[in-house]
Length: 66
Image (tube, rainbow, N blue to C red; front, side):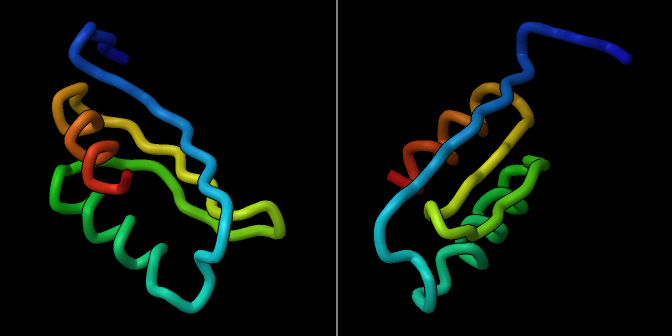
């Protein structure tokens, strides 16, 4: 495995009303557009996102969901 300073991983926990508004598909589409990998799940505490990829695109992703 090659590790560089250009790779970032971010864990995000979003609370509030997120069910039934298409938030998970939005997150998936946004991550795919920026060649990011990870997961997004709903549970009783909200939405949990784990995203990894090039540091620049992780930053763009974070700005886009906030």
